[in-house]
Each structure stands twice: as structure tokens, then as C-alpha cells.
Image 1 (cartoon, rainbow, N blue to C red):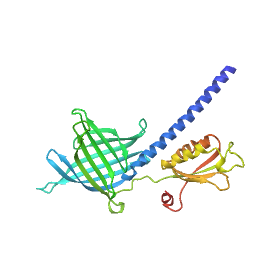
Image 2: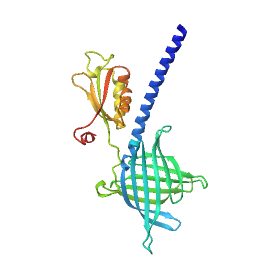
Image 3: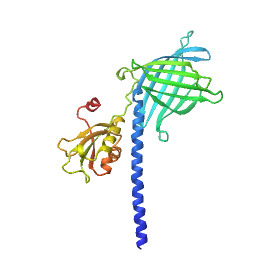
Image 4: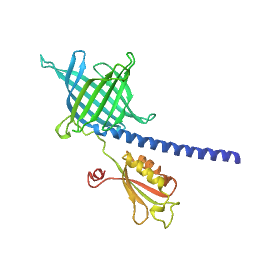
Length: 299
């Protein structure tokens, strides 16, 4: 009987450990997903402008529109592109470019995966994008010829969407530009096509209170909080921590994080080393600002 009891207890504690590990892993993945997908925030909205591309008929100029929206609460982002040009003889408009893309977080590489579809060629594929300053790059190989294609998109100094497409016949040693476009963002109030697509942020307040390993009658500076501060710095860099800091009377601390829901916020805060090591206890609650925009301005 004692052996059976020990086996049951061991199984119980192993199960608890596995569940805790799974929760932490899920929380970490959600944090990384949020941080990576947030890097596409600069693209959200509707854009219009002009572009040119080298086709079989020569250089062709088109009017271009692109619409980027977050979906599923920010888990994915979609881009819908359309290019139109007028026949110089008849004046009739025809489609020169029609494409659709989906951005999502790839857990294995911890990068953003881009899946694209092009109506005019029937082409589709997927690749990992490379985030660069105020933009990203992506591309693919043409296996049949050994050539490469790449696209570079950036928000330029005018705040416009500037994108170029390049082609290499020698495996990436030299590049030939075959596409370029520049688009301006359409103000939401001036376009029926421009719909607010950014999910409304949700904020959660956390309060820290002295835990069982808090050093009584010692100031904050003498508490074992070095790993806590490093974790807070990490959350700040990932734009999850909105603000935070200790109370002057040494009774704990207060802060605000942005998260998709209360359970996610709790997982984020419960991964703080200070909480896990019981230096502090924590209370997490959802919070709404009484003055719209005040939290965003603090960022």
C-alpha cells in the first residue's frame, strides 16, 4: 500500500511540474509572438500610390493600393494588394497586380513567416521575413534557373511605404531592380476603404507585495531583485511593460502590462523571477484608463 501511495504521489507531482512547465512555455511563446508581430504595426492601414514593374511588354506603370490589417486579436496580419493601369488607347482599366499575404509567428525559428498568393501568375509560396530598420526583406529562389528574387520594404523619411523588387541571375552576387513603388498612407477619416484594424490594447495592473523571502526592514536596493530587474527590462524592450516601479514606503511595487487577456497577463507576471522565488507576492487585474490615450502617450 505504501509503495502504491508513493507512486501516486510521484505521478501527481510530476504532472503538476509538467503543467507548470507547459504554462510557462506557452506564456513565453505568447510574449515572443506578441513582440514579433508588433514589429509590423507600422504597416497597418490603407496605402495608395504608384509603382512600376518590368514585364514581358516592357516597363509598366500602375496605381497601387495596399491594405494591412491585424486579425485574430493580433495573432496574424494580412495584406491585400491591387495594381491597376489604363490602356493608353481605350482608357479602360485592367488589373496588373493582385496579391494576398498572411504574416504569422513561426515558433520554430522565432521569426515571422509570410505566405503569399499572386492572382496574375497563380504563384504561391511561403518564406521567413527579415526585419530591418523600419521595414523588412523577403525573397525566394527560382530553383529551375538558380536565380534569386528579393523584396525590400521600408517606411522612408517621408513616412511613405517604399518597396523595391530585385532579381539576381548569379546566385545573389549582382542584382537587377525590376519593381519599385511608393505609397502614402490614407487617413482613416478620408477613405471608405481605410478601416481601423489595429486591435484595441488591453491593460493589466499588477501589484507586488513582500513575499516570504522579502528581507524585512531592508530597502528595495538591498532586496534580491537583480533577476527581477532584468526581466522587467526584457518586458519593456518587447513593449509589453507599459510602466512600473516601487512604492517609496518599501511596501512593494506597481506596474502595467499590455496583454491579450487576463490569463496571459498572469502568466507573464508569474514568470518574473521575484515571483517564482517568492521574494514578492502578486495580484494581477484588468484595468481601463479613464482618459483615452493617456497610457499610449506615456509610451
